[in-house]
Image 1 (cartoon, rainbow, N blue to C red):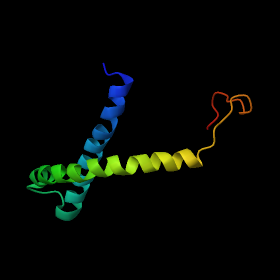
Image 2 (cartoon, one colour):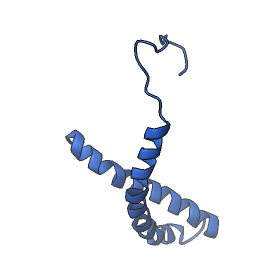
Image 3 (cartoon, rainbow, N blue to C red):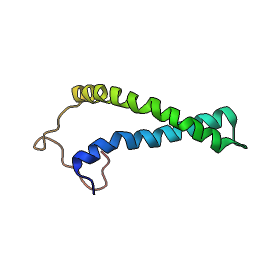
Length: 89
């Protein structure tokens, strides 16, 4: 099992691995279509996508967190409307 700190460190690389795989596959399919050599082309492109995405995520995420921190309003439990089962939000 991971500690919360370890999970925090593992989160970005894991998400980047999955997202770069999905996006590189989508781009290969868009450019080549489904056919012979698709998997080989995808597996050649995926490491490049990962190598670009991981440093980009490490640079971009702190700014995104800061921006969201500025535009997020804290919710006080005492003044928040009561939530009921079946109610969205």
